[in-house]
Every structure is written in structure tokens, then in C-alpha cells.
Image (cartoon, rainbow, N blue to C red; front, side):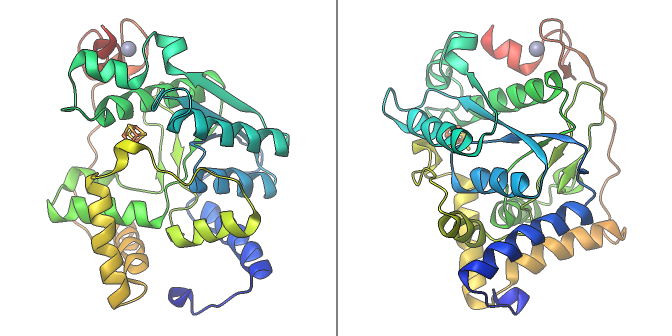
Amino acid sequence: MRHHRLALCAEHFLDWFVSYTQRTIEEFHMFSSSDRLLVAVSGGKDSLALWDTLARLGYQADGLYIGLGIGGDEGYSAASQGKAQAFADAHGLTLHVVDIKKTYGESIPELARRTGRGRGKPCSVCGLVKRHVMNRVTLEGGYAALATGHNLDDEAAVLLQNTLRWQTGYLARQAPVLEATHPGLARKVKPFCRLYERETAAYALVRGIDYIYDECPHASGATTIFYKELLNRLEGHSPGTRHSFYLDFLRAKKKGQLLLPAEEEPDLHPCQQCGQPTTAPGLCAFCRLWA
Ligand code: Q46
Ligand code: ZN
């Protein structure tokens, strides 16, 4: 790990990884040992590595798997749920499963097709539904925060994308902790935000975590993947680029060195149907989508 000037054997890498995550949790004041956490689990390497790490650190962390219904009986969703459930069972952890079709009547691809949203790609529908369900389960379960497996590569790709377009509103909001600015919104934390994707992958492999290697079939061609490739090339040219790009951004922001718009408190009120906060009059975007 050239950015840390550190080379470790398998055994010490595992120790380093766990304590580095703990240091990230402390540095960004993410949560404390008495907090109950909900981990968004997809069955992939990042989310399972995160769940594993939090459990090893002694945190009370339950998992949430959202069954999107992608790829039929033996496709991506079924396979990833199998991995998530097997991990939970092997470690004696609690996994909440929300199957979208069973709960709301249609799978994500069906809903996307019927509503004609996303030009053949279900991702915008999928993102909206996942955000709603994660928020609901976090609040209903009384969890202190929702933890996601976003890693440094993810965060740096989003940062590059937002910077190239000077999306100052998004830049102001991009952070390892998203505070609950409203009682109906869950607090969100990203304990892996300082870890490279190859580090989380190495951790999952060395730890022997059985995760789903395949990405969702709809992920190919996603813009974030393009920005990740660009950053990979920069990283190949000068190692540590992503690390300093993202962390120096956070540092500068904390010191008030970036002139970003002050966060406006949006005018939120409860959705007439589900009760989740929304800026829209009447129904929230989630309920409007189903309707
Ligand atoms: S799961 Fe859903 Fe992703 Fe698949 S359909 Fe698109 S948004 S790519 S993270
Ligand atoms: Zn609603």
C-alpha cells in the first residue's frame, strides 16, 4: 500500500484493516460501541467485509438485504441473497430481508418496465426504491445509523464526477457521515471511505469471505465505472492519487477552505401515504412511482 508506505503479510493485513476501519469510525465520529447499526448488505465484497469488520470490532450490527428480483430464479439477486444469508448464518448475525416483489407487488425490473423510467435501465428506479427501504428499515428498527460499504474508489469517482461539473451542492453534501437532518431521515455512515477497493477485495479474499463476484448485470456502462477507470489510470501514473484527491477534499472542506454553498434546509413534510419526509406536495417520489 504505497500511499501508506506499508507492505503487510496476510495476517497483519487483516489486523491493520480492522484497526484502520476503527480509526476511520473514530476520526469521523461515526458511531460508538453502544449504538445499534444496520449494514446495507448486497452480498458483494465491500458490504460483507464491512459487516465482518464491524462484528469483529464488537459493534452490534444487523444486516439488511433488499431483494430486487434481478435475473430470475438463478440470477444475480437470488445468488447474492444466498451469499448474504450464508454469511449471516455462519457468523450468527441477524439479516433482515426485504423482498421488493413480495412487499410491494413488483420486482425492480417489472416496476421499471411498467413506469417506463430509465430508458431500459432500471437503475434510477432501483436507487430510489433502495433509498426508501433502507431509510424505512433503519428508522423502524431504531438503529442509530445505516452503514454502507462505499469505499475510496466509489467516493473518489463521485467526487471527480461532481467536480468536473462543479456540482457545488453535491460537493457540499459529499461526506463520510450524512447526518439525519430530519427525524424521518436515517443517519448514514461509510466506514470504508478511506479504503481502496483493492484493499476491501484483499480483505474479503484473505479472510475467506464467500461473496458474489458478479456485479449486477445493469451496472455495466454506468458512469461511475467510467470515472473509476479514469482514476485507475491516474493512480497507475501516480500512486496515492485517489487517496489524496478524496481526503484532501474532506480536509479542505472541514477547514472551510472551499467556497461551497451553505446547506439549505429543505422544506420537508411527511408523505401522505408512507410518512417519509419529502419536499414534494402530497406523495413522496417513492409512492408516486408505485402509484
Ligand atoms: S443494483 Fe440496481 Fe445497481 Fe443493479 S439495477 Fe442498477 S442500481 S446496477 S448499485
Ligand atoms: Zn411516500
